[in-house]
Image 1 (cartoon, rainbow over the protein chains, first blue to last red):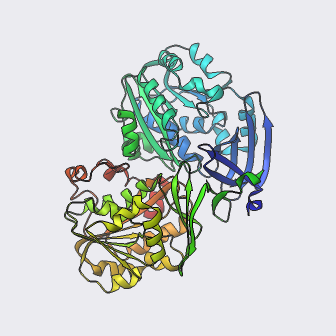
Image 2 (image 1 turned 90 degrees about the horizontal axis):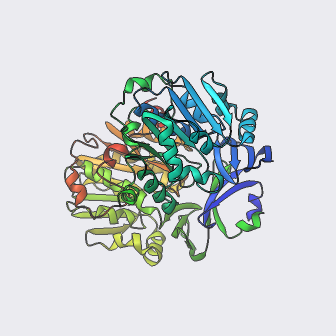
Length: 283
Length: 283
């Protein structure tokens, strides 16, 4: 029976008990960098699909939910985000959303893996357009090092990373969070993707414990991202002073052009977690 | 490579372009009824899994989100739901949630396929407990026929069905909706599962068009259900008079015992759809 699946990419989770299948209709790119295995293929339904070390990073069909939800809640929680740093995010999708905000003067991206940047520029123009925006400033280097060398500079710091294992693990730990805090101007907001509470309970809880040891205010929120494990993905907005709504102005949402996932009402709704997940954090 | 997948159940969608994998760790039940193929197996992570005609219906791990979200928004939108009808739902999970409401005096279930009921009673006790609740009244028969024969009787009618194809299709069509309206008492609320807007756009839009031709007020809402395609599932609450919040009383949520997905805040948050989905309905 499973010969039918010979042409499929599959990603298994939870000790291989369950996972996702995506048919590889045409392989476009397949190379290894010093950091990871980068694969890009075409799928008739999902469009271009980028896989990093066997995990789905982007599909053309649903990347909008991840990128809109990583960026807009934090930028709209800040009264006037001018300088924004993105750590990771070499595909450019996060920059694409950041640079939609009229208040943003400079959007810096620090991506460790040049192969992600170059392959995205070649095969994922729908996200890579963000890399070439006039406000964007793209560096290739270690985000942890970059943050350490910058103080009192950014209004919003965004971590757009792979899962908290291997070279990305340090982006989910207290020493990094302390450096982020020092790199931000007063009133700064930090946001990062924080996995799914359905299948990564222990990692999920730990991230919020460590964030809470550095930031006074930590607000988890969620979004539907079909091609990530469980389809329900979460994010953390962390700050010393800022809440999601204190500076929120629905007029600013209108200035962003047409969005596909985020709307003004999302700024409330996304912060209501499933009861079991809210309890894991309050616990 | 794919010999690794020999022991997996897989469900492909969108012309087989993408899908889900679940390892069959132990097959518990495998029979065909006049209506469908019923399979139940055990998975180390997801617990008991019920498959109907090749589609995941229930996993022990995440069935709570579907059942809580199918039932509680509608019952809490109604000021005093006493008589509730469930069409389909032979596994009992919907009855389990309905009978948690102190106001409910009688919860009738009409399931077309006795094999779903009997196999659930044997292998899915965590949902089948709803079938044997003192308030529950279980019939085996065609829900479309049952609705036609009852007038002015129910406060809430819930359709807990398979996808709108084959024998379940009639449950998503105007003639059935008219019969539902006649079967409800004044102020009645109808609710049904309505697929995912990510991968079933055309069917999804059509359901809401047909609902809107019978009911004055149609409120779509969504929930994260990891094991259904896309992980984001929607529901429709339809009525001539009722809105989600007019009669909502958070005290009644407290009377339901501990819930895993639904909380009082969900009654607002779930009704905020992704922007693209909201736009598909508003047209």
